[in-house]
Image: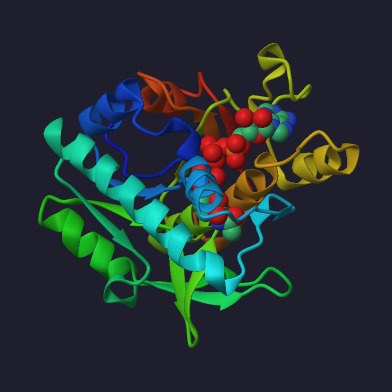
Length: 248
Ligand SMILES: Nc1ncnc2c1ncn2[C@@H]1O[C@H](COP(=O)(O)OP(=O)(O)O)[C@@H](O)[C@H]1O
Ligand SMILES: CC(=O)N[C@@H](CCC(=O)OP(=O)(O)O)C(=O)O
């Protein structure tokens, strides 16, 4: 049970003790990408800004970007400290560090982008030295930083590494009925996802997550999974006993 994994940690899981212990105890190599949606929302609100979402993505006018970055970086440092205190030395970075995430702006959403290049060598060097890299989803284009949905960033990083992507969130996977955990779908293919989207079963923040799982597969990840961030989840996902698993 020591497969290398790219794990995305959702902002909705911030500081969850059980999750930090789970990640710290995982015996294999990990690269982490974290979100911070709730923290970003809280900081923007304090500054008097309101967020608008299109297809699960936060429209980010240039004047919102500093607050987005500050909220993400604080979230990353807290996670890095929590993991390090539990014995897994973690470094909180973003795509601005060593220019490791190259981005491209998406039209009509302000400074929002997707990832078009990942400096995987940097991540592997850090792992080799015994550090667990933890990336905030900020990428760079020629004009500066871009706010990237953390699921999208995680999918791109998993693809570049060729590692499985595990998206940890606050639900046990993709549900047939979005409100009923008993309807968890254990396995999805790109065709099955297309049908679910058509039916409107995949909504809100689950849209970029499912898209990112499929993107990871197209980009080179052998499989991807969406699962609930709780103690024992990574082993359970590897045993195919938890989450929704995506295969090509
Ligand atoms: N079909 C579905 N199955 C499960 N959850 C869904 C579904 N459609 C929408 N959701 C919503 O997606 C949310 C997860 O996305 P999000 O809040 O962005 O998580 P995170 O912050 O971890 O990235 C769930 O809490 C749930 O409300
Ligand atoms: C463009 C875009 O939507 N960026 C996200 C980045 C953070 C994120 O994705 O955090 P979660 O994983 O907690 O949702 C945002 O601004 O909320």
